[in-house]
Image 1 (spheres, rainbow, N blue to C red):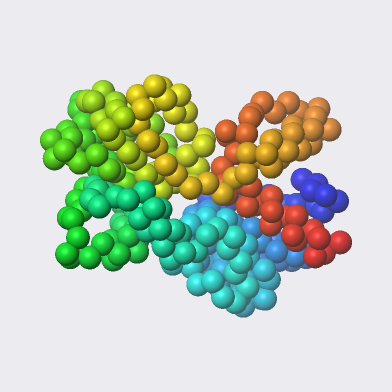
Image 2: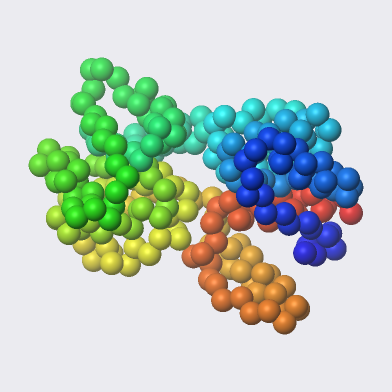
Length: 262
């Protein structure tokens, strides 16, 4: 792939075994590459980072990961976990929430919300923490959990889950009467713009989230990709709602790398 005059090598890494990872990365290094982007897998990325540190090759990431050390040759353009967590605290305070319920999907969610948990002192109104669970396709889905929250009369909800589950959670919340003008949701995902929320716009529910994608800039990104594909007689159908934060950060990294290595 050619990007601004720079040739990009794209290698899909499906392996997790250390010998295979070393073999693939060493093969890439022999080609004279200037940097390695990714991979997205946390397990694989840690090994790639170690090799890049040893060989002093820039390693660039665009994902949330509290385990990777941001030192040596690693550059991660994704907001630092602690900084992002503190931003959550500032937002909740700005909204004036005295009490709220946290719905999290896994342990990484608790790490993302650790500053919010620490900021809520023992003398303040209590907060409730609920784990989302795994099976949304079960007979009742997430409804039993959501009904517990509804019965508690809590109206402020912090939702931390993968982007592919956000719509399902909100839809099931709507079905049991938890998407009204009485309810407010703070969703921690930075890619909420990619979720279709049109079904909930008439309920009066306040849905808040951060984003790192500038709508004006993403439209330009989409047009660049479409025109780039047309040069190779390929058709690309997409709009700016399909652009995730990591993809925009990847383009920014490529632009920076190309500028530094003309």
